[in-house]
Length: 442
Image 1 (cartoon, rainbow, N blue to C red):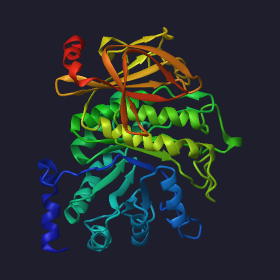
Image 2 (image 1 turned 180 degrees about the horizontal axis):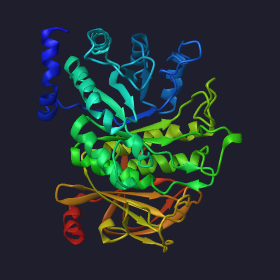
Image 3 (image 1 turned 60 degrees about the horizontal axis):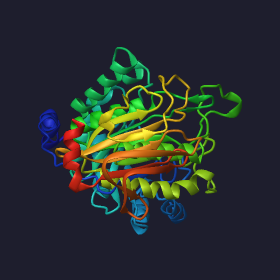
């Protein structure tokens, strides 16, 4: 190993602690996928099964996906041709890269791979690792900083476990919630991410997990504390064959469930969403089939993905102030109260959300503030089986956001809000009246 490289590696802890690398700029909110075109999936004989092609890129663009995967420089060329950004796999064969940069040969190979693409206009972030244990954070941090030394302009993506991962996978101790909080704390302190990313797949054959919103809120809180954006990974298929399925096996979500996932993700201010999966071997009900035939979800996502980007743009400069459930109370959310600012009618069901129970008749309201005053409210129909109309009374005049037209329209301070199954809408308090509302909400 050369003297300069050895010196750099010895200084990694100092660089990590002092944040000497430039902050990463995330740009447009991300819509991407978990497995699919351009990914590192390897067949029995070794070759990749689904390279990125013009045909895939045209379909992805039609579906509102603005960020794709790539494992080779020519795929970056294709992404640039179609105006897409690309997540580039540091290891072309896996999302669990295990480069040992103390080994001169491996360090040189990684350096060559990065130098070949770091100035490419389509390069967005490097994909490094999926669902590490806390025991792996230090090694991943060294890898990340090695990459950032060579390319300070691009972030490194590590995707975290969900809250329901066991303590062996998390690498922490304690009950489920405390172990997960410790996992997030250590990741922030040791890895110092440019953004957070995780996944939580809650749809089961007989009902839903009850920790989806709790997990989303914990990631939101951790991202806010670190001053970084976050991505939410959501379920778009099943990966358990029908004959092997049990009541707790993952089910295939339909268009209405996807609507709920996108709007709840937007409601917490996420700056990225990715779907597991676009397609992959051994998975059922994927967004498209391996031959490119779209599932019913694809038609809905064409609109939802574009709406997500618009809402995420609006919420990016604001401070997340809270999540409130009008109806069944889910872990990790606050009971509905005056801090939510909106009075909703009719009355909603009550009680604690139980495992495999759905949020029937329940509305999620999240609040975002500018410095010193509340400004925006996201209202989501958590009931993805029933269209609902709410009568909303606000403390001041309200405007409603058309996410496809990117236009605000006045609706007054008392109005009916029709929300189809799983849908949501972004509202804002008129700026000339928001100062007065701020004092009332404290």
